[in-house]
Length: 501
Image (cartoon, helix red, strand yellow):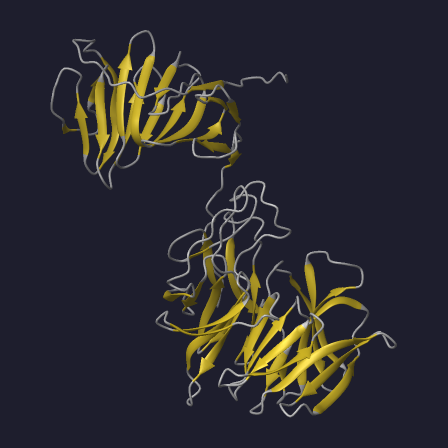
């Protein structure tokens, strides 16, 4: 064992919560309330009723302290600098026999135990004991105890005798399936630059779901997951909360306007297939707006890959239509043309499936996993293909009558994994991202290429791994996603301006 100087251990012992027995006890104060916010109640050991506590209230052995809703309190042990901070709805008993004994029946308390304190023992409904020089937080519930260690080390002993070592910066909950502490995940600070919007990772409003090792330890996904697509529609930002199966609308000022679920009401949640299975009902790969005759978006077609289907949902969350196809294998991207045609790219089938505005299947055309775009009133489909003989990409435009309108070799350098993101017929150009020939190093090259094949501009962007739609143009301005799903929830999902023009 390594010899560590000034290292103090916490021993955690599982046991049922034991009610405190009343009696005469010692009336000498052993602690005091150093600060109080809201409603904080105190009951001495020999008294049957609670009374209001205030800063400076002395606490004798056997006293009970209870914080009410939206209230908090700090307790100072008089014999040293040990402090206990109670959040709302916390119930605590303090006793002293030959050592301090604290019974935390419920709520959240943070303990800062000084090395001068001889011993402090904490008991929760699941049981725990602690000794010198430690900073930890205990969240006690009837069926769960969570211990988070800021300083020191905790040994947590379960009822079956197994032990979990909780080192500094880690936490353990009695609900964990594995006997292993996890990293304490810090909440990021929301800092936005000009024209930026952002969402926290997690559950609830202004948050997006994620799948990674932090949330599902041991999960065997090749890549982490988070929002896989975003769009800018009618001067607002829309984000696919892919894991949670919903679409989130944000204003330019980062205020949430809507949250639309795309999960059918009658769809049951799947049973776990393996340990830490997220049990997703849908996984949104991409989405595209459907517009009325005035050009205003009123619904979306959503490509989701858990059931490999297209779901049409309106702004109220009502599911209007669903498209399935036995040839769908791994849906990836979806576009809706001005003519109402639906184009959905499928990585597994290596095809783009096309449906008309009446939702009738038209055809499936070849595709090389390299993005695509739809442009013009006639819904011209643009794809790129690699030509083995020349080593160049070819931009191909095809109308709905299956006529080839354009075949242009693009004079890009040798590269990997090209992705056609959009075309601009007015400017006679397209935007392509790719990985340089030297290999992936955290960035994509971004190239603006003319319809004559010449490269107008090349720059680079940080690559948001696993996203399908990560760069968007709106009114001649460009935005990109800034996302690292591996580090969620300690970072933010951001959309920020990108200097291209």
